[in-house]
Length: 207
Image 1 (cartoon, one colour):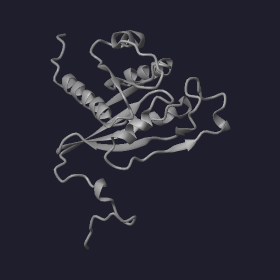
Image 2 (spheres, helix red, strand yellow):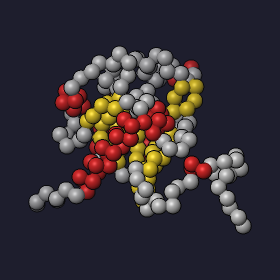
Image 3 (cartoon, helix red, strand yellow):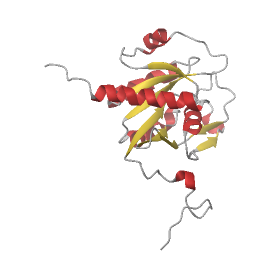
Image 4 (cartoon, helix red, strand yellow):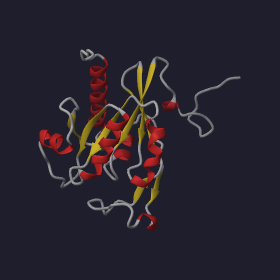
């Protein structure tokens, strides 16, 4: 039977087909509190049409979801976001964005299964929404880097101050990022890959 790549709805789109040179695929999770820009990052950097599960916010979230600082938000991720980016001809990253509201955090266990590492998105207007996210990653032993997302009117702090505020180890990369800019998003993922490489090649501590 002749299976041809097609741009029609009946078959896979040409851009969705993995390059023939792909030798390895890595699962990466994009995490953060409610409304920090996870869906935007995945959609910006993905080389395929991203899968999103955004739904219009309803009265069910009143009194449950904290909209302080993001009062204009009208949609929210209820399951996950999914995208893909080729780092080079051999390495592909599969990106899984987590839901931000705590009432959907029960989905995190499945999303983290098999993940090599994570990018934590930070919103300097609402640092408190990311404290528990970092705690959960540390409890699971998932390596992560912290990308400080850019929002209009958001306070700007030196990276060392943010590291101290989040109580992060010196070795964890903390850097600015703009989830609306593809190059900035790609740089964030490359920072994670370099950090994972450093961890994998670090000499074991003497007993």
